[in-house]
Amino acid sequence: MDQAATYHVLLFLLLAVTTTWSILAPGRQNHLDMELCMGCICEATSNCNLTFHCTRGLCGPFLTSQVYWKQAGRPTIPGDHPNNKGAYIRCVTEPYCAAATVHHYLARYAQDCDGNGRIDCEDYAKIHYMGGQQCTIHMEHLGYYKVFKECHKSIQHLTG
Ligand SMILES: *[C@@H]1O[C@H](CO)[C@@H](O)[C@H](O)[C@H]1NC(C)=O
Image 1 (tube, rainbow, N blue to C red):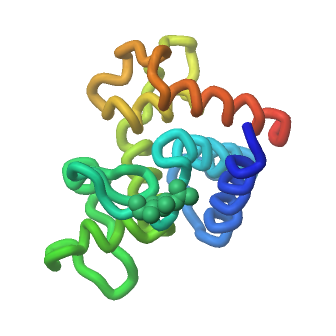
Image 2 (cartoon, rainbow, N blue to C red):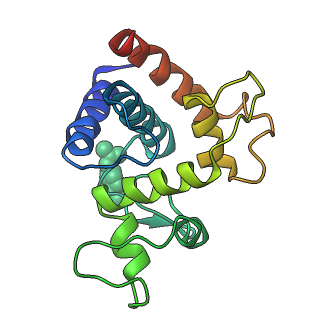
């Protein structure tokens, strides 16, 4: 991982640790692992470009579709309402709300995609990209997956 990528992961981590998600990870270590994992998913998805808008119906740093957002329970930025016009775009292009959307989605569809006996970051990376229903499809050849792998390898030094 190059310096820019490292910076993105750390930036993301800084953003993430100031929020209080506890859906997937009651323990602190698990919580940190999840934030780092999501940092790598962000990195692989858009180079974790926090100012990214939309391309072909995919918006924000996690390239979140409207269907994905709905399946994640339609989170909103503070003061907004899911039924308001533009609530989806406002959420998924705002870093905290975008991350909350991914977090809810991953919690909802958490499963052992690769059948290695545990639900880990690799599974979450597949669920994010392939969707909750088809994460067993092989994606080892994809650029997304290669960037994710590189990033994940480097953060494992941080978490041991
Ligand atoms: C982030 O996305 C915006 C909008 O597409 C683009 O203008 C900008 O160059 C991107 N930044 C990086 C670092 O790629």
